[in-house]
Length: 481
Image (cartoon, rainbow, N blue to C red; front, side, top):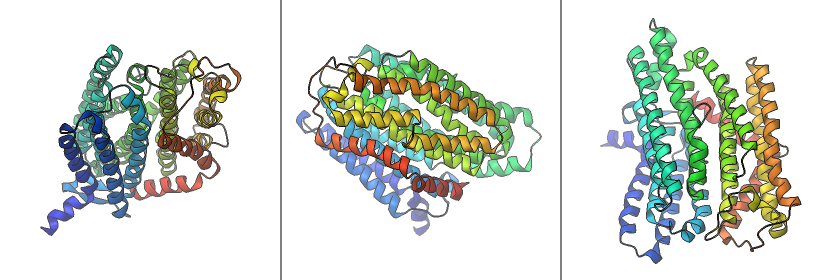
């Protein structure tokens, strides 16, 4: 009995979330429409409970469980805590928006928690099967969330595109995994890394397997040329779902990439680095240039996401502890900025009105100087302008690239970042120098206003004092590297 409990103890947060999701599903089925807030409160309680369990059992050393399928290490614990925080913020931002559009239902909260569970499994996976299980649980939840607004043809179309392209990417990922398994004879990341470091004669099948794996990973990140789903899904999905897709899953995607490339295929860095260089350059170029032409803010932020994933890949392709730590820092900062950006759209929206075009932000300073200031901080951070944390995040990944001798890549990244600054600063110009089209008072609920204030100020505070968060990232990567 003690051995049984020892095997399952590291996965206690996942077990707790799964049990609570099942409970919420049953309770919500018996609730009247005017009591949907119960599912919302229980969802936040679930996240708080999982955070408590993760923090209580924080692992200083890697611990394998469930027959080697699951690992509990500092990296997984840190990422889970940030996932909890991000998902909780998303739920708070989304509450009023969902209520005004008839989407304030238990289905949204259940799907959000199932997606969170998938992300938790992904960050704690030490085996190809566990990685794929977590990825599909997350993906299927996101497909359903996008299509949740059943009377919207745009949302349904976005969900279908997401589903079809996601299935294609999953197939590529599985095919690559099967080829690597054929070469190594193992699906466990640690065993695979050991076998590959000792050398293998099957170089061609291994390279083909890595190509398919990197292609599948690039789709999940939204990197060019596998980015075609990102603008359509971000634009077509209800903004609350776009907020969810654009924030927390990026943290899980980083863990997914690090587990496979940084741990399982670490010895093959020479094989996958060049592919990541191409993906990073294309993502930064296409993302920043295409964003300039957008008039819809959600589409603009979608292309912004593509460019930011290119920057994150700069840290990954460095293939060093400093590079992985910088990439982790970047993706955590990006989740914070993305949550704030899409959260601001939610705060300005109201029943029958989507504040998702650039014109909707004209004259925001006259309507709400505080919200305009917070949006300014978020846009400055996304553009990488000091003293916001976005500047330090970009500087960290550029330093990691320079350390491995790719100075030209760092220069290219800086140039693309300068191009990107144009469309971020355009929003600041609209808020402070243009006349507002809409003078309707902005009246977000108190908790959303408080969380948005904390979100915006955190971007500034972490820019002034980035060392504590960077130290946490380096510690988590160092203990798992």
